[in-house]
Image 1 (cartoon, each protein chain N blue to C red):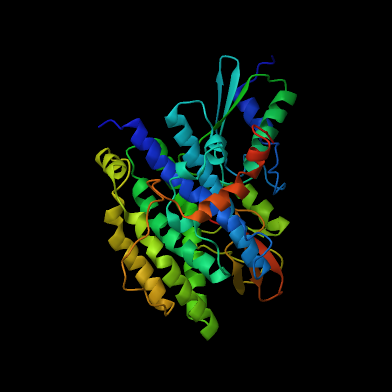
Image 2: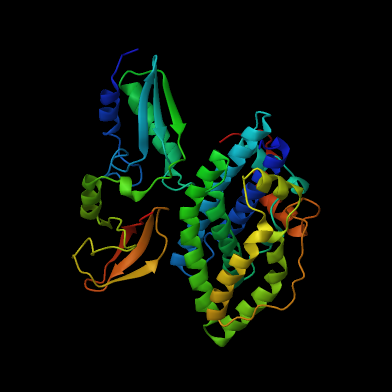
Length: 153
Length: 254
């Protein structure tokens, strides 16, 4: 067993991309709630974005694989429900990365601020839902391109 | 006040079976919806409901204390053990009927979850807080669609009115209360559902009014789902499809 500090584990976790939106990491997404070392066991607390999000089990697997690759062998992944995940926990770095990738970042107003492609602000909602539970479909009336909006919850 | 484990288990099964059965019903639309956006929306709604089921039935299995999992409860029980309200096992009908059923349920969930977030049981409060964010999206969409179709063409209006008349006698069961509800209310775990009716009626009255739909006068209720006395024949058919894999290959794991 390689010994590691809590800070080191956070650094490792920061390299794991979200399986469905690979331009942001799971740490940027705000779903890693805690890292603790109990004796020789590394305990990582993860909160789901949406309760039925299929990426949750893949994320848990990715964490375990990464930490094993880094030399840890006693890993426990805990699901933490409360407090419920909110998009407020997403970092500014992640918001910028999302926009560059073509996904409008979450806004407290409940809709995208501008089109991630042309920057236009004449926008219309196509559907409350999108290709993953965390996104909705919108369209820009300036450039006419549809785009995804990361829902604010 | 301490909670009777058996009563808490019944309460949790009611929550989890409602979301499980409706989640399965809604998933039946996958690949069959009128347009792509609606197909995605229905599949996402079903996914949220099944996610909520994992939390409710996961906790139910823990309270039960027999070493079972949420999957065991979902796939290894037969119709008589299910505790969902009859409303959620009703067939999908047309798209309008599916969305009206969804609205009648979403509206109830939105009122109930607001109360459960203050539950004396921390796990119940945590699940409700998580689920309420998803339910807010569900009720917004189902209400909008009910208004769009109800106050739409003559054809869509007539279909929505027919759906309301078909489903209305199943709405009342959500507000039935019995010994389990009394035990939950006494322990501060959950409110007596009968006390939620006024808020519910105000919410659906506003939306159905906007949808130009007429709520039937009759308050006759079909019941027997949430207490397990008698489900409709539809549940058995639904389970044969949902539980097919475990029935054909008992114990099979993914």
